[in-house]
Length: 380
Image (cartoon, rainbow, N blue to C red):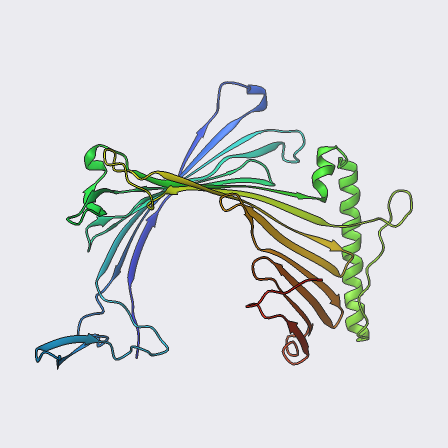
């Protein structure tokens, strides 16, 4: 029998602060700051003790005739993993911040509009009581500038300073950076910018989405949903097994409305880290930093009610190469589903499958055709 257990206790609270600035009184601006501190304690016993039976020892005589003792686990090679050795006691601290602004707005039905200034600004640190060592300090920040634009950043500060060992290698010492009067050794940070474009993006930019159109679209959507619910109930009652049809949508001129839903997500990510492959600065005991950044693109196009195309690609500015590009095409065949996946990159491959939509028959009624991912495919 293999088992393990641990004990944990946590405590957190929320502190609210309200501030009303003196400027722009007509806008009735109110700032709200939410601070969420938390403390947790986790204890895991030492499962290496003999009373648990996970580790045993035996003696043997080596080739030189010396008697030696070796340790082994009777559960080694079993399908279930067994607990490790050593007691663990950790105390974790975290602090989260959220800052929002509420102001008067005529466009909102409630009369007020909420704006997120700082969606999340948090830091975390832990202390290992058994090893008597602090962890690195982690800082995260997230800003929601718009509904389609989000900024994320993560930074790490090491607690212990570097030193040279007896062999001249750079290792972490037992002395903290705080003892030298420094905040912490900056190991680097990473961040990303993301923005999503879709059908409604250009309507908002060029002012085509007014309130009347929104009300009309809402009424049309409600009518279509009611019609679809009625069709589903009719299909169930008649048990005809026919395909559910959708009502055609007409534009203001009476013609069939053209719809091609699409979305395009652009994401730029960067990372600045210590480059330990280079020589350390002996005076400051700091490694130089290196920059890696890339641009990723993903999205989908829905051509009609049953065709869907998704794609993803990117470019690595550090290696100056395109990342793996994938294209997936799916088609709803009523009782079956057809999918085709294409991969372009160092290892080009493809896969094509037709499967039954029923969960009971999806593994029985299927046809798959795929290339060998270990070899490249020559396209003609």
